[in-house]
Image (tube, rainbow, N blue to C red; front, side):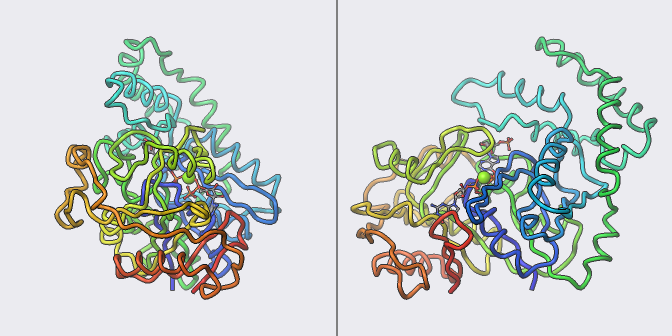
Length: 417
Ligand code: GDP
Ligand code: IMO
Ligand code: MG
């Protein structure tokens, strides 16, 4: 059966590691949304791979595909593709010809958008131009990969884009769009990637009866429609976007992935956030520093209320828990089970105001005892009793089985139940 790995929190749940782990049994690994705002770290036998666009299946030599729902920065992709070609022999990567491009003015506009917001209202984007690139896609102004097949098409499009954006760029003292440079750079980029650009129909035909693994980027709580707007990313991260973003209409099972605690980069509500030394300890032990922006990630206890919501909006079939090893030796571990005594079906998650007004107290948390160190990773049964109690409580609350347990960044530190 095809599978999708979907982040259930605010991103960085360990999707890259698990996609690498599972991809052994798949033929094609597909990204369907987001861009290089994603940062996926995979560690295999002491080699660290940091990927932003190329799916993590590339490490095992699997064919990788960036579907039409991805927004692609040509500069970034060229560098990442180059680096991966230096590390791996003959990586197999295809790009949908229908992908929308991120160009320099999108990055300028991303910064302008943030600069006009008051400090407490800033989104805290990755500044990679993601929002403005999706705005252009919806506004029918994107330059698509297929446009690069004709200089005339690029010139025509960029001329009208320039008319639209130059007055804005100019009024914020930003450099205006340089048509000649943009066209020149796009043609150079096209020469690098022309052999790996394919139409959607090609992928559909080639992989009709093959096994496909979908790699989510970001997380359900950053979803444009389901997350706490406006503190979200600009794409739909949930599993239902797979059909649109990949153009592959195939059945799949959804594996929802979450950390044993919560983290968030950027601004926006975070009900179970820790503002004390335990939060600092988790951040340090879990190396919670953003791969893309190097910002420190905010840390908090696991939030089962939002996790239940994420499972529902993604139709999750099975779960994967990561990074419980980071909580080793803490004298007690807490999980959030209610929001001011309210259960998840009484909460409005897509309005930031609702979540911002929460102020959780002790009665909203379940407390678990320390499980000390994890000495034996051979199977679920050999894990410390208190860790098994923790995992079974989460499973019971969500009523979905936890089938994958990751207890370290290495590919080998993984238990399948
Ligand atoms: P992604 O964006 O969901 O792919 O996650 P990131 O790669 O941005 O962040 C997850 C980080 O945790 C990476 O540095 C991984 O190497 C690391 N990691 C993944 N799983 C585990 C785990 O079970 N335990 C520990 N300690 N680290 C993990
Ligand atoms: P992965 O795939 C964590 C966050 C940003 C910001 C918000 C909007 O590694 O899990 P954007 O640049 O997308 O317009 O920023 O979304 N964000 C992520 N946080 N992991 C990610 O990706 C993220 N991608 C975007 O920090 O709060
Ligand atoms: Mg990440």
